[in-house]
Image (cartoon, rainbow, N blue to C red; front, side, top):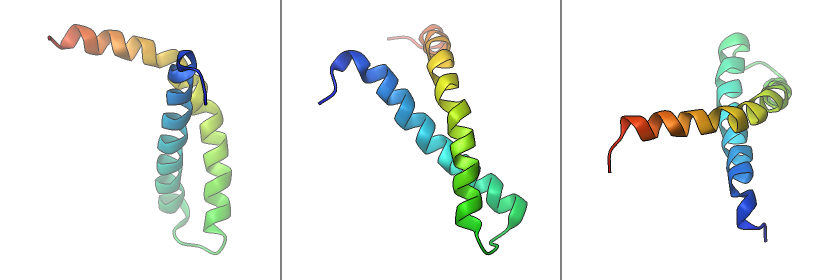
Length: 74
């Protein structure tokens, strides 16, 4: 089991992986259509996207949390 102190990093890893997978799939489909080898093109795009998305989520998430906290009330 992973210690709780790593939860924000794990959350960012999973979130960025799922989001970049979905977005790169849609973008690849729009760019190429359902061509032969689509899955390979998609996975290649996904890995590149994830490499950017993961560190971006880790940097941007604290700012997004602060904005949400300011825009909401309890």
